[in-house]
Length: 352
Image 1 (cartoon, rainbow, N blue to C red):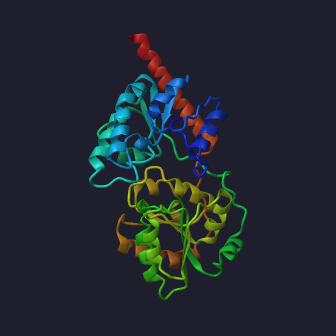
Image 2 (image 1 turned 90 degrees about the vertical axis):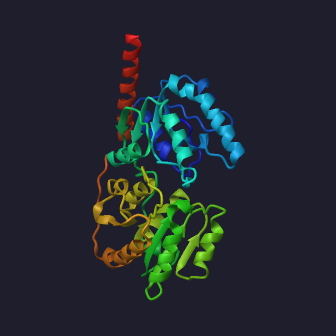
Image 3 (image 1 turned 90 degrees about the horizontal axis):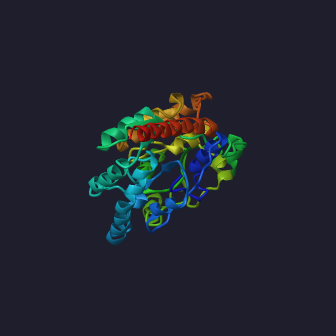
């Protein structure tokens, strides 16, 4: 698995690795490095290279670092081509994409895809969106849902206790949780909340580490509004349950197109109502009884949906949304796909 994050803030890859190991596979995890990162995989003996999040191979902080990374990538592409490389399509583009960089980033993604043996999508909806956005997609693919976070994040605290801890007793609370970054549309959430909360007993809880350059923008929008609680820090795994259970609705106002939304998988554990854009990949991944959607990038529709949620959510009863996506189940799907790729390569070699 490469590049593999050693950072425990996101257990996504760790749980996939766990599922593969539970299915009898040996897993080698290779972290990223700045200079010629793909070359380091040559130090290892493996059958399948599982490739994640490639944007760091071609996106740089400035033109010079971008040029260095892109030159390194060009020289490294034969390594991917000579191995069985499976591409994990978790994002459509990087979260830093702009209209000016769209074509360039698409070019680099297609170069990588042309050197991969197969590709993994989280849903049929993700497959359709991805293939409509990129000129090239490997012929061999598998649909592999986002691995479940169930059992990783604790969920033992009651709603009443969670609200008491955060001072939200008897108050309808919207929640924004996780990395506080521009691609999550948080500015529109705050602006709409400021309007609808003027004459209502509502709270907005924002919890997560804010991008450094984004923090002044968020603080300026919040000003001294006592109805907005901004906790600008990394939320520990054991504390996630406090935020989720204290809230009445989670808002995920993506301004890009999520393919494999991990936030929804996290929300699934706590059965929390979600306010989100009406995108196929979101609809396919969450309980319809708990989903309040609106037209993407439509701030007026977002405000209307927030108001609708305030009225409707207190009246709904508990619901469940069954998924077959435990680490062991995901590991089994991946193992079967890997074996099909190995068999395909064997047949090609025998016919040469």
